[in-house]
Length: 629
Image (cartoon, rainbow, N blue to C red; front, side, top):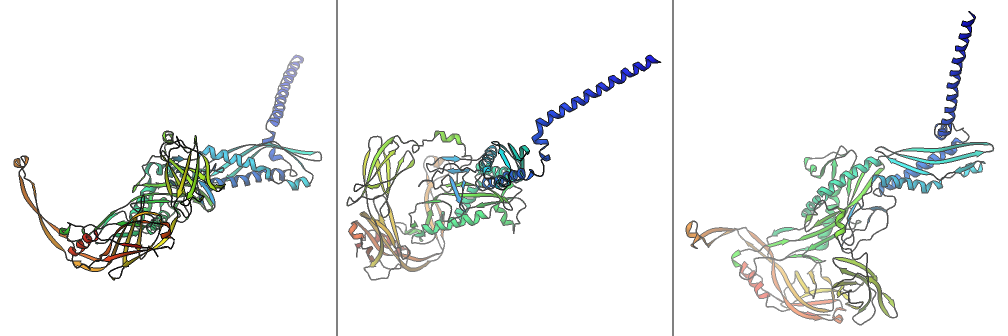
């Protein structure tokens, strides 16, 4: 019995030792966990005395993060928009689009030296920019109230990590902050903030839209439709006088048409209601969850519209059917074909309530057609020669007027398809000069502009020349009048001033003011007046010799084949009633009075198509006088 008791006691002691070991291990592990994770697990246990300090720090993180998110959304995914790169005469786009005072970097544009440029931010770029912004601005967090209350706060240099998700953004700041007052203290090393935001979702939607535009150029397709609806492109008018459009009005109509039509564009989604089936035209075949808008502001956004053939004032189309030898036609018509090169930006916006993500892209129409898709391959840029960025030559440029007075002027240089801005000539010792670096080029072209003077283009080989003097001709604004020698009244007239390298046109009575400079001109004046004529619908039969069918045609046998030509009823309201031509040299002194009078003989009022053709034939032999008051 005694032996059994001893054995039981030994077993009991052994079990007690095992329990003690387990308890010891738990204590040691708890101590280790405490030191390893005290900042994370026990931060919530910070006393109420110190909690407001850490809560304020978290509020500052959240506030700076919200500011960063707002900047990213409004600036195309960028907080730091980088160096500003200006546009040029060739391309109107700079590296940024200014919208409501905010500079938004383009995701796609044509640079000033005609290079395709793409600057789409990555998600990691945006996360880094948020982290850097918060890091730079956390010092603005105001703890002055706590300092005044006697608290001591020690900060460690923070490390920040940002993660953008679809519906939120997580910002984690690693920075040990030790707070103390008297003999009490607290410590916290991890600070994590979540901000509700659709930035990640908006960014994904933006990339989807951008990729669709890059692949399909759907914005250009809509722009071409607007062009053909709002501007003269191709067509025929039945009339015997030139068809005239004011260039400025055509450009304004086109830009306004682009503005209103692009505001009507939508992506597939449930954020709108269509009024009728025709509105489906404005729905782009790509579904989105949030509203998307396409913004072009005609009066605010940089745009380029070039029309050929046209000048800065007028677009003209000449009639066919009134020339010598065309009497068989029996009517006149005016065919026209204008070629447009159009470039403008569109700001694409994805939004929900007050949160927005926006980015601009350039829309380009080249020779009346959309740009080819897939032009955003950046590797192609390496094959382009950008001579402007690395000028290796030097030049000294002087600018004068015809009396050799110095003139301050802007100077650029065209070389290998690039137009490089060189700067301005400035007054120095009674001369206007510019010393500048310049690309080395054979047969390059200096382009010199000064207010009040005609633009001067002058060959300059910078590979062998280093000094040049440019003489600028002063431009004068003059009013052009028609004086009919025959005494008949002048209702409408077109006067062409063909100079050495330009054609200047005045149209009376609407556009009678033009700019001229000294030089030789061939002047042509056409006077038009009322001559209401109606030619009824008619049919003419014409016969022609054509090769015979069958084996005889192989050996050159011919046969007569006849067919009918139908002419529609034609109404002619105006016809040529006077004018002529002259070649003269206009002096600067002639232009100072601001008036040019054209003295023109009259022609008889036509009563038939033959009379119209006769007037055009006689017109070629008529001369006009030129007088300056």
